[in-house]
Image 1: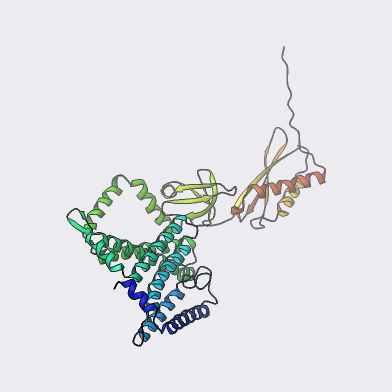
Image 2 (image 1 turned 120 degrees about the vertical axis):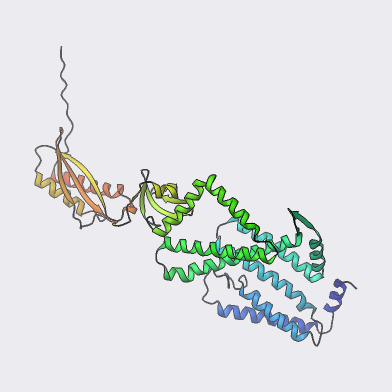
Length: 411
């Protein structure tokens, strides 16, 4: 009698209604407990998801309850339905775990969706093989297929187990690092750049340790990695100098905090706000919407202007030319009033007026004023001040001089 025949026979036993009732009770209790615990959940929760059943907690609770019910009922009657429910819940828990972690870690990644869909198909296939009793046969066949890597002989089953182990480690690493960044670092570290580098270091360290443990668990000799590490070091020393310099410079910037996320900087006459600091490059976004990708090595080795590092206040100047017969006191009062009437101009330091030079077309004045939010732009506040100056000149009846030139014609 095959496994399918035995399964069909067990599914027709007289105690099936009790088994159905036990399964429904386990699912109901699991859902109720998950709902009570997740009433104040957030939308990005791995445990509860967006609708309780799409989180990780519900299938785990259901799996534990169904297993307890199976152990308790198998002494008095067949439990074919509960045996079927176990692999289904195991596959569902794995799929929901991968789906929720990938959604939290990569909310807009198409590759993460493809990996999630592929894993879902493989998990359901494994569940079907488990139910019909073919999973041991498939694993034995995979174990009989071997590949030679140098002098080492590795089975296909070991490769599959290694890939799955590394995948589980990767998902766990992403989950733990995200949880640490959200739950701990947001309260303990106020600086966004420092929080980012700490989270990246924790993620990298957990991933390295996890991958080494996974490889060791499937029988990979870790001593061979020392040769790979030496080759990688030689490659970094010769062919990847610029790339390695950018990565090192990125960590130096994040640790020194010479440039932080949110700072207004000027690099190669490109001024904008630091939107993000990656390990290889820094993304600067200007007020016009343009973005500049600057290698981190450039921020370390060359001169840049950080308008937000010590003092966010920035001096802005605008020029005005009036006729030679203009009253200096009236012009000075008019310019100061125009600056003070503009909301973004700060009172300390106070605006100042300078008679810059005696020009060919009239008296050239320079109005100097300070702002403390350069990230909101300098050209717009300068325009507001110029509009206020023009309005004041027209109200005072002062006309701007028109340049005049005398042309002499020599015979």
